[in-house]
Length: 266
Length: 90
Image 1 (cartoon, rainbow over the protein chains, first blue to last red):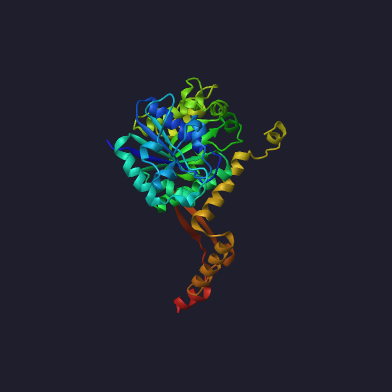
Image 2: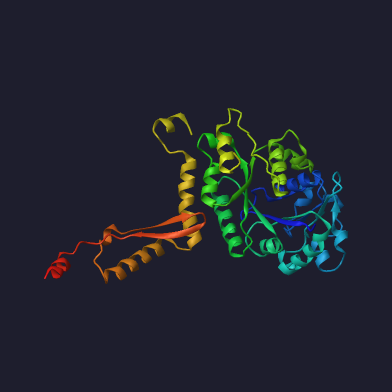
């Protein structure tokens, strides 16, 4: 079966796009799918360090596009998961080294050989973002429960609709249930009410995300981490499985029960 | 949110965030600034006034949304016009 091509984007930088791509890639590959992830952030490459593959890079995406190597030569195999590959971004070039039609051509070549292609979009709504969405079958928008991230997510969702790349699905990252409970953080209901798109996952704030990125082993490997569990659940939903939204509330089900109902899973 | 804020009924910050975002997103989505909206309101009043006398001070114009689509909603009270009514009576 040809691959599903999924782009992860956000508008605002620093909300967790690269973390989301790395974790979804690990979770899907751990479930036995062949996954290729592409770092679309040319000039500011990072997916390699988050995946712990920075020392293995020989060729990058611009080398493939400009014909200096074959596609297979730029696909770096993961250390632990044999079905996970990374195509790194070029570090010494800029976004204009790639065009949307280059991306469409490259993805066309990848499609028959894998189950999922995950594309890490750069922040912003310019060339790099246009490249990242050009070949996408589906787009996930990552946001944080915070005014600037939600505003930028709304812009991106609007552009995706105009480009007929929608409907996008939302990953609400770095939710702090205690702050929400105290009324000092936008709740998932608030964010969904504002953005009016489908929710595919809520990732709680979790210090293990930083610890695991320090080590270059995404948190999805960590069976005890709540963020890791949230990413594994999103991966299953991407694969078409119905997974209930997890209960993260230690004080009883109230808050997470409401989220379950919001997502229509209860 | 401290004890005293709660005691004096200060609004929780998430509510502020939502209210502010609601307004900002309307302007972002429609590409209408508050000033442009005011000028739209003036034009609307001027146009409608050519046909019927309206209470310009009481005109309300705002947005409603259904999912991601926006709707411009205007509430334009019409002044009761005795002159017109008496003309009809003749």
